[in-house]
Length: 441
Ligand code: SF4
Image (cartoon, rainbow, N blue to C red; front, side, top):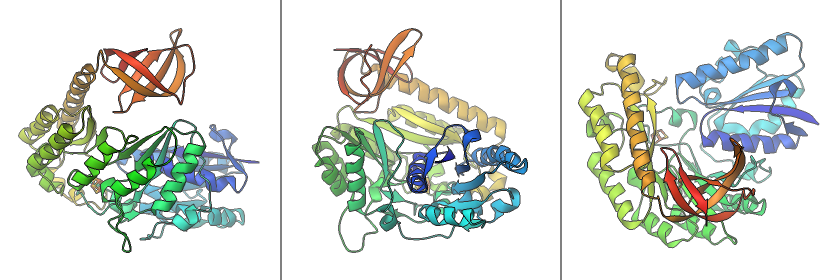
């Protein structure tokens, strides 16, 4: 038995890649350990969405490099988005790294392991326009234990928003074959998972690239909904103008598909949206959100926003604050703008917003999100809702279960029994900023 430690940074897509890599490594008798000091193979799965994440990755592997120099018999792998982007450059900056593995080539890992064991140093970062579903069939996935299985349905993105590194690190959009996705979902359900989340940078354009069949997200939802047993289905992330009426209607009609949409708006100002190369303006976004709210009772709509995009004026920033109020966004992820190499906006150095102003806008945006989140949570006090229990723990001497409602609200409930993985009906008794309090019915 050998031991592998993987440090996973960034988004769910990276977490999903890590689960796939662990599945491949199990064929080489590797078992995952949580302590890097116990590992024979150390890997970092990097994120390049912000400069800070990239810097953190190099600082994390520095310690491993030191261990190697001191004579510890270990192999080190540098994977993920930064690897895809920097390729061979990684060896210059971190000469102790044994292999560099980009996002396009994760199914090369078995070959890489053979090569590094034979003493070679490997860089596998060539871009590909194909998904690797045939290879995916050959390997199991070592999923992190829990109730929610994340399944990528698309990889990459064609949108080229001017701030975003994803099209450069994950490549052009490719849809995975429905048969593979359905099999992965069935395997996860057989293993006891109770929720399937379909994952992609832009899930609504799923299937657009299939040349020989007309099969889109709505059809995939129907086929997954038909699988046996009680479980939930979610899908993230949605690009505003790609959400079709057919998709909304199908999601309503299917009992397992939850009332939850994550629709990044990024800015409340139409001018800034144009500069970001988003394909909608404030009014268009408003119409989409209003339509979903009208059609889907109790729907939760969440979003993403960037503070301090190059050239953003105070008035334009305030439009973002008013958008969060006006569209009653239930929760939003916020980030301060971080220039990323290769992207269009990174070149607009003369329009960069000074750090102190950007930080203040980021803080104000956070405050607005908090305010709206609490407002949204308060709507559910007194209601009876079903939660899927995700964890059981003791907090200050009290046993608690925590679960999610269909519309993705977190609920904490006092309970002495571990009900993880079960569907439980609760009465909502209180609302805090980030969660609801409930009681068993
Ligand atoms: S839609 Fe825009 S922000 Fe989202 S992944 Fe694609 S390029 Fe990046």
